Image (cartoon, rainbow, N blue to C red; front, side, top):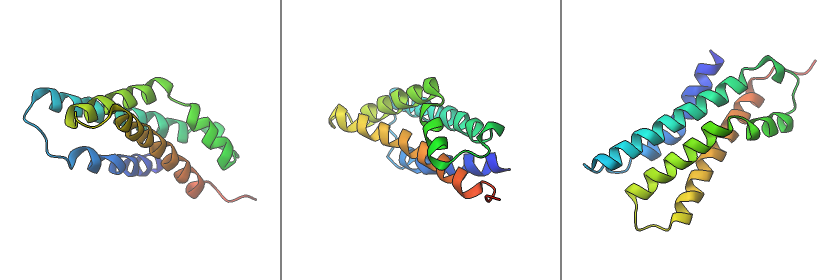
Length: 126
């Protein structure tokens, strides 16, 4: 149940950002959006698996945050690259550095959300 709640919250975070822009009729743009969404979903599912590990019991917020920051490296990189490609396809006149910064913020936001969920749902200290 917790994993579903975390997953739902994470999906809502960037779904609006990806789907709110006007979709071009171009197949490249649609493909880029699909890959970005798949990358997001894969990364969030991996983070949800990290969240639900029994070994996290008793971790401090800082320790869990460090653990999440290093978790899922291939999923994280795929999400970042796919989102960067999508943004570049949708907004070709915007500087690539701005797109990279946006993709990095999306990754950081997912990590922050999973840490927030961890803190809110961990059992109280005895």
